[in-house]
Image 1 (cartoon, rainbow, N blue to C red):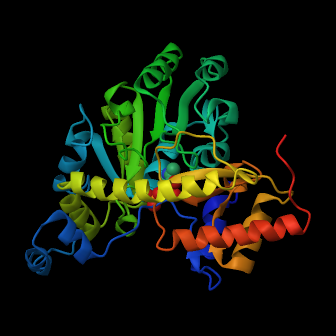
Image 2: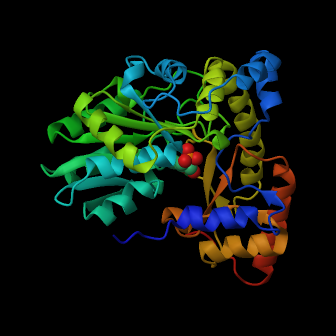
Length: 383
Ligand SMILES: Cc1ncc(COP(=O)(O)O)c(C=O)c1O
């Protein structure tokens, strides 16, 4: 089986660990917390937790997932029962389990681009036809439902995408979600939605899980919960037969999750309002800083989405390919942003709204870098 290079993870992760990375603006997880910070935030007794850990059994946890964790997760939805949730190793484990279980070579899928690469490279490796539907600048990077309607057919097994979108942050309204469900129903297709970034809005953000029996949703502790190190991902699926098949695949892949990870995450989830409030505060604060910076840099930069995630996708007006733009920025200024070719969007980069200790310093360094690019004759005015 041939597998494409995982462009985002293979470029970003080594760059992240490199000595050159002085100001990290490339990630999409809300600023992680220490265990102590987490307990202070949620107001639970950390010492009682450590006492509990002393007696914790280090054998396998429950195979279908720690009940306390599944119970807390079910409350993130309106109609989901704990037994409809399968715990996996991160969102990555959840996504790959879904792809390998659901897809066959004779199927086609609709992949909404930019997408998380698992949702098109794994299907391609299986031999599934991947039909791209691109988000467009003119639509503010919102899904073009008419194009989806015209692209599905009786062989469409699933419509696969991220909502809120990574990296643009665009999100479907509830009415648009319902329309997408109608399109999926018309050809009896699954909706497979990576909802890793769902939850940042002040008001409740609907999930496809509460709208369609043939929805499969994946999510994880990594992004808006700030706990990527916990490696807790989950799949929500209401179909018992498919759930059995998903569990079967997961048995080949990882058997079950980690006992500590699921336990700590359950405690955090029981105070999810406080976790979300912290995440929103961080993202809103950083967003205001980046918006102001973009306002002052209209000559060079543009951002087109009404973003509800943890990142912006920013287009630049320089005649430099995206990977080189970001490599040189890292080499010359020590600032790491994620290049747009990771998302198949040239002349762009993804910048965090969620992780920056030194956001303003990093933005000032990008200003210096862009002034140097203009001095080198690389500036190309937008058409
Ligand atoms: C859209 C999307 N899905 C899945 C993942 C994987 O996340 P995890 O750390 O939970 O494996 C990421 C991580 O960047 C992501 O952006």
